[in-house]
Length: 307
Ligand code: G3H
Ligand code: 13P
Ligand code: ZN
Image 1: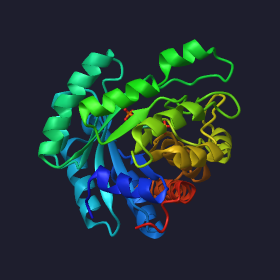
Image 2: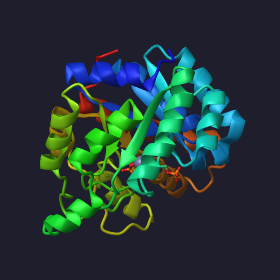
Image 3: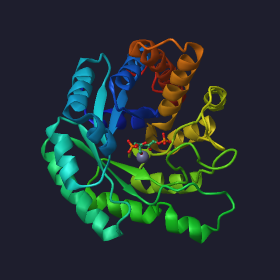
């Protein structure tokens, strides 16, 4: 069933678990996410970026919305990293139940002003709003405190930002970054900063962690073995994800892990059978591989069995 992002996340916060926001760009990814959510009885958020909207257009959004509506678990359809008011309105017209406006690259005042506009429009039609404060950048443990302060979310600013904008959930920068290269070994997460932010916003306020993929080493190795090229890839450790959920994170964004699962399996299938040319024989196994990743994430987040 289609619900708002806030309905899913406020419940998650109150009960102390996290919910995955998984990026989708086509039918197989959407099915992998929803079938895993139903198998695990977990609420879930289907995230579509501007790149996804450009790639899949109306056909993609219609399919995703219909699939979310038919699902036997609560599903929110969410705009990921909306860069403008216009994109947000487009998503709302498509029937999204949750939107992100990302003006984190602008100065604080502009971010507040632009986010406020989006909140007025989205709330008028019953959709939830996420916005971001700080820069998503991989941070090494030894980086100086003032350098961290310049990049990562300032707790006091976070409190003012939420009060002035009226957003429903806030994406925080605490050391994670997008993609497969999040730092060496166990990438650094600023748990202290997260606890300060959560302390000021209140225990029930839903916070969002972008760049949260785990980049499973087993998949990285299989990707390489199948001929893929990838550097020193590391994701966020499972212990850090669970600690962050206990500290206030409600929404955990995951895209890279699905891309890795998809492409690894496609490579393996094509390598194993050079004669294969039925797309279903290539995309079907990729869908199964992504399904496994999503189920494992739901167990990690504690959302399994909550729907
Ligand atoms: O945060 C970004 C997501 O991984 C979506 O990526 O803009 O390439 O669709 P994309
Ligand atoms: P990953 O690249 O870690 O999967 O993060 C995805 C994300 O934050 C989407 O908004
Ligand atoms: Zn993101």
